[in-house]
Image (cartoon, rainbow, N blue to C red; front, side):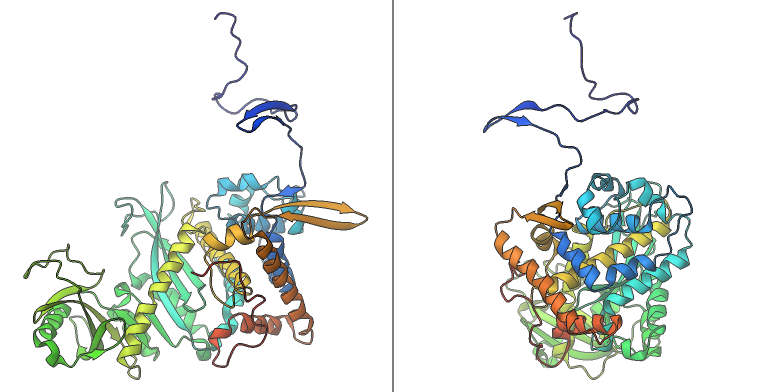
Length: 525
């Protein structure tokens, strides 16, 4: 044993003093398929996400990328500094492939193929990206990202649309600015940030997101941004109504909406006065003139003035009969089988679950009111997608300013990707867990001969042929569409393109050619 001479230290103390001068020489390794010769190639002209070339084609043809880069307030004075396009390309690429930490960006810095597709010399390291926006004024960053977000959805705001409001929690594990203890259902006692988000419901587009301290999840902290965003716009761009859960059904929120004559639809908490109203209606049973709505629900309209309210308001009480009693008569524990925000009461011999809504929209009938609120559940899926499949759960820095910027950049890239993928799905939204493996993951090799650049792509997906046809169809569709719209300026071309993609927003039938493919390789749902 004294002759043993270790050749490697798997856990060296500190950083290594010297870096390897070259890749290892070819060597043999054993696999279950037999021995193979392992050879490392320096800087191969390949990328793991070659199918994103079509997405970059979309960004270029629509002029989205050029405007995004040129309007960015990032500047450098040193000749050794990275170009701002390199920083932005690294951020967008990282978000697109589902990364959620700055440290993950180091795995992208050697991707020369993707850098060339973005038109930059190289992709940058996590340190360069993390420090890039550190010294830029917060108001300047906000103005820039507001303009970029607005561009993606502004033409759709002149139609009938619904504004969904919600807050979601971002758990923190360090000593970040505004990391506070607050409402945190997944990690009680853990500091967090709160994302106060505004969503264009049917289009599944992020309108705005405000990053705040973890103890500011109440709707009162979202109202300055919400009503400031609305007041800055023409009335014709306002939503048909705003919609939110019981956290938004506060007196201040409703008063501010009523001042602006903006209809709202909120869920009410099961406070003692609301519970007494439910109990009174439950005792009346069928005498209370319940109207059948949808999905087994019955509803009726009444008025209510809760403590702290300045006026009576229209209230919709809905009930649905339970298939079987899950609790004994008289029990009112939290173990009752009802959805969050609902209560259970006995009416006659049957058990019912109850839900209560408050609204200022007098013209809307009961059936549509209750269905419109149930449609809000789709917004919850969107928040789940943004946190678990995109980057809303990560990209954390010590200061709140850069965390806010990255949250909004994630929302912007999410909007770009959603618009891009809808071109081949007849306008239907597909989550990233489906679209990313199909439309982004694929090996591509870049070659150049006789001044012609060639990108040879290979997808390991089971529907590789359909995906290839799908992506080439999107590119062909884009180029043909813009070729016949040369008389329009850039803004009008983008408006026309959104009209084709989001045809379901419009009352008339979809225009011919609104989708590039009637047989999408992406499964529904």
